[in-house]
Length: 138
Image 1 (cartoon, rainbow, N blue to C red):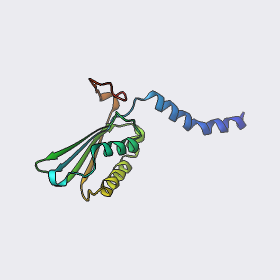
Image 2: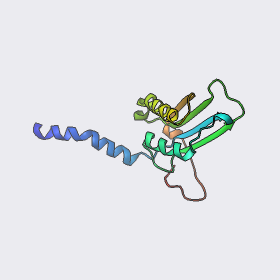
Image 3: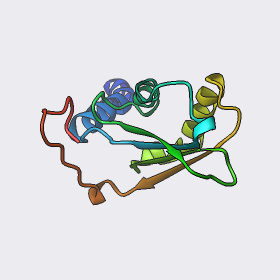
Image 4: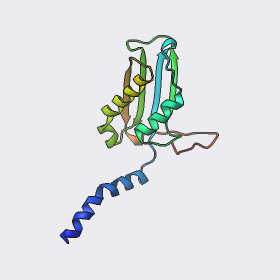
């Protein structure tokens, strides 16, 4: 019995990952970028969307990115606000997610700014799309 139990225990993390991915709906990060007109990024919202999809491990059609020019902004000249479901594994790596996003922004010419991420209880979110059927369930 002991010889067969060890290999099964090694498969447990894989099984848990499979069960989690197939029972939890896609996560929906909302990414808002604020900057004065002269500090707006040179990259397109779709480029940031594609990066966030990879960074957060979600699906196309789930992430929403908005880039907004503001009249004034202080103290940071470039501000990114992220709202996302606060799953335990995401909460554990929140600092790393922000660090990786900061590096991505810096590589694209955003020399200075501030990143903020708010993780919330998933059951509190409600979203509804209309018109053309979305690529993924919100």
